[in-house]
Image 1 (cartoon, chains in turn yellow, blue):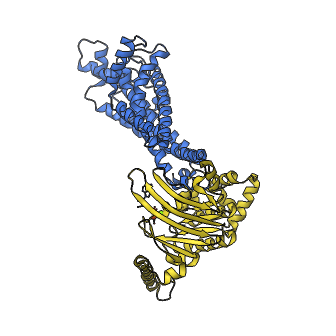
Image 2: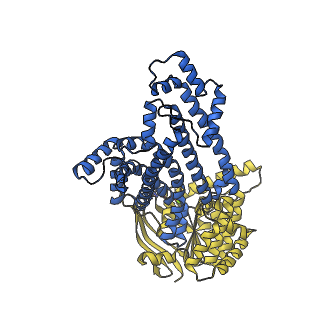
Amino acid sequence: MHSLEISRLKIWDSRTGSVIVPDSSFRVEQGKCLAIVGESGSGKSLTCRAIMRLNPASLQQSGHIELNGINLEELSDKEMRQFRGKHLCMIMQNGMRAFDPSRPVGAHLLKTLAVHYPWSRSDAIAKLKAALASVGLKDPDKVLKSYPYQLSGGMLQRTMIALALVLEPDVIIADEPTTALDAITQYEVVEQFIALRSRLGGMMIFVSHDLGIVKRIADDVLVMKDGHIIERGKTSDVLAEAKHPYTRYLVSSKLALSRHFTELMGGEAVVEG
Amino acid sequence: MGGYILRRIAVALPLLIVISFLAFVLNQLSPMDPAEVVLHAQGVPTITEELIAETRAELGMDRPFLIQYFDWLISSFQLDFGSSYVTGKPVWSLLGPALLNTLKLTLVSSAFIILFSIVMGVVCALREGGWLDLSVRGFSFLLTSLPAYWLAALMVWYFSVKLDLLPTSGMDSISSYILPVAVIVIGYAGIYFRMIRSSMLSNLNEDYVLYGRACGLSETSVIMYVLRNSLQVAVSVFGLAIPVILGSTVVVENIFAWPGLGTLTVNSILGRDFPIIQAYVLVLAAAFVLFNTASDIINAAFNPKLRKEF
Ligand SMILES: Nc1ncnc2c1ncn2[C@@H]1O[C@H](COP(=O)(O)OP(=O)(O)OP(=O)(O)O)[C@@H](O)[C@H]1O
Ligand SMILES: [Mg+2]
């Protein structure tokens, strides 16, 4: 019962009729993390947004998206809106652009909580502060009052994670949540994602280009290319013995890259393949 | 915020001084000798060299250039721009009422322009690509491309002559406003509506809109985010637009015989009435700087990031 099941998802552009994702089916079990990898333009983001029914109106979708036995396609717009945030939570790629630039970060966080929970404002603030502190932000008060431009990308990423912690959604969809960060911050944010998973115990979809990160966080992997799922399986299996030439190419280029990186860093293996 | 306002004003003042200097110099460069203009205007039959020299002394024009400039500048701050060469009346007694009339026309027109462009810009952006968006854009493009004098003539012919509904000229009652305001609004609303629309659209494509929706916020809340960010652009745009409209009423004022700055200035330019022209340039420049400064301050109030950048 506790699962997210996508079957026969098709996404096409209604203006040109071109099909971007022809026929995708996959499933995320309770407590599991599914990684989606694939080259730029392969349809990873559109798939994520299709689950949340947040693609632009010009893009149409068909198929079955079922969360814990509820067919999301059949929900009214209003019901779907109540689902977003509370049951399906998204974490964006670029924290710097994810918040309204002319309001303090806390305004958005409190507004989101007010939509989903009947808590008093002071309760909501207390919960947010606890969550912000738990993701390693030292001064939660200051974060709430800061404008997005006053915080770093890593801090904003943690802020989105903290909001997810308070919202306790069934599914977290993270679309390249570490791509915009430098290597060290990336490492720390991935740690926070791993912690988020174990604390919430829900489902997670994690889009990434970085097979090193995928290996650390994901149980299963989907490999996408030109809108098609070309390979799937347990993360360790797919990375160890990829069947599809494209996946082998991904893994080998990743290995080459990390070898190059290792050479640059002067020998010791810093990044595992 | 207080510091920001002070800094902003500290920048505006030197700018005004520079403009005033340019206005003064440009008129000095004119080939006509002001003394000659005055003598012509007084109807003096034979203009001799001595008479010109005498008049120049009377006007204070035999003094060093910089002294003349500073004298003029300091008096200007007290709204004393000297006397008209042609009529001999104090410049401010001509310019003041004309400025007031032009301001009335400008502010009424600007209010409608702002109202139309914001309403249409927002509605069209939210219905991007729909029939309303397409038709408003097409229609406004058509209207904006019509020359003001042609449009004015057409409207006078139709509403005043044919239907006899509205006055053709002057500034006697509320109904006198309708045609001039309509011509100005038609000329400008299309331009500014487009800016609001594209600013809305670029904000609608921002990540924060997607994240807001993904968090389950209502469409109204998300649109409020977008509005707040788009209207910042609007404040700057209109801060510059109002003085532009102020300066561009010349054509409309002349067609509708509106007793404003435009009419006064055109007559002054034809009559080489330098003190009025100088005062006009100064007043217009002051309006530009004033509105620009005001819009920056309003924007900084919206967006704290701007306060730091300055
Ligand atoms: N609004 C849209 N209308 C039409 N086509 C779109 C739209 N958005 C994206 N596409 C197309 O759909 C394809 C998939 O895009 P998507 O953003 O899902 O790729 P992605 O796998 O997330 O890539 P990246 O790794 O660069 O984020 C791309 O070819 C893109 O050009
Ligand atoms: Mg993407």
